Amino acid sequence: MNNFLCTHTHRSIAFLLAVLLLQACGGERTEPYNPGNSSSSSSAIKVTASVITQGTASTSVLDYSDKRLQVMRNEDDFYDISNGYLNVNLPPPNFTNGQVVLLDLGEQDSCKQRLEFNSLHAEEAGDKSVKVIVSYRERAAVTTGCISVLTRPFYFYYVDSSGTLLFKEELSK
Image (cartoon, rainbow, N blue to C red; front, top):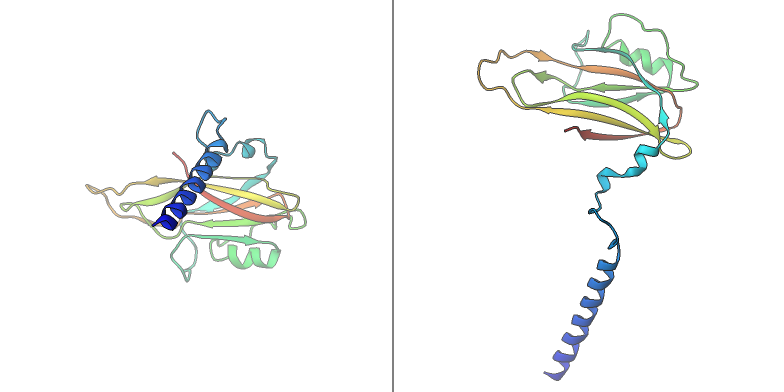
């Protein structure tokens, strides 16, 4: 019994010390820490990201129906992929200095709940990396009087960097 009380007391003291240490960490904050609202992104160096083309229907039947993010780093890949969406050849982007991002939202029904594209921007994320932030808006289902229309929204963006692209997707409010 005496051994139990001694062990229990040591555990209690260790627990109290851990709680005190945790309270000391970040105790000077006036607001709770939210890693999603990091202030470092506001001071990050912007990287130019511009839309090349966009549409709501592909010109050919694609093998998948879900949302897709894809990076193209050369002219062959760019034409192989863009030909599935467009029936015109776009001028080739400068793949020496940048790369192309395809954002395909997949098949969407106008009456069902879905994500709609809001924005895409890029910023430096280190010496050889670029963070591409894709923002969406959530649309609720329409339950009364809706006529179902299927679309496939897609966007081709040129990112003016040859660095490794890291993607972050978020819902805007």
